[in-house]
Image (tube, rainbow, N blue to C red; front, side):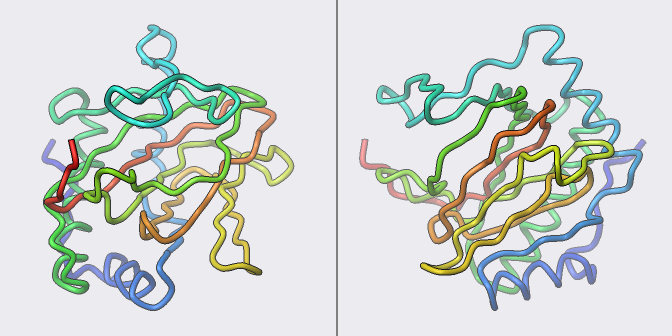
Length: 210
């Protein structure tokens, strides 16, 4: 089966570009077909069952450390060629990368992404996605993989859009949230059940300080 790429001028991708230009973020509740969402969720659960997901660290490089009082998710990075469902997703993200470059002139060069599983009660305190010493991450993208998720299950993504405006996103399967990595602080609220996602970043060529 060929990778599920769509044209970079697809109306769905253009809506995301327009939202980013106007608001700095976009929420698309039906970004993926149900079958692909289920396949990605199954891949995440299989990796978790095989012990491949590891506790996520805070910081990067020599300064990274596991701090469950800040974040409690378990992650594994995805790479091309590992699984057909992941390859489909990466192809869609490359189409979105091209659309954002064409519409927003961001100079995005690549996309990195990992599975994230938050066990019940886990959270991630308020933060921004761009490192202080590495400015490559430009646009964050979170795809939710949760079947039959209800608001009372918790686990919302809370974005702080300005001093007085918050936006909560319920992590329903197939929903994609995209936002400017350095501009929108956000947190993950605790949930009552496992919370699955693919979290990733579109990156430009940057200036690393070490």
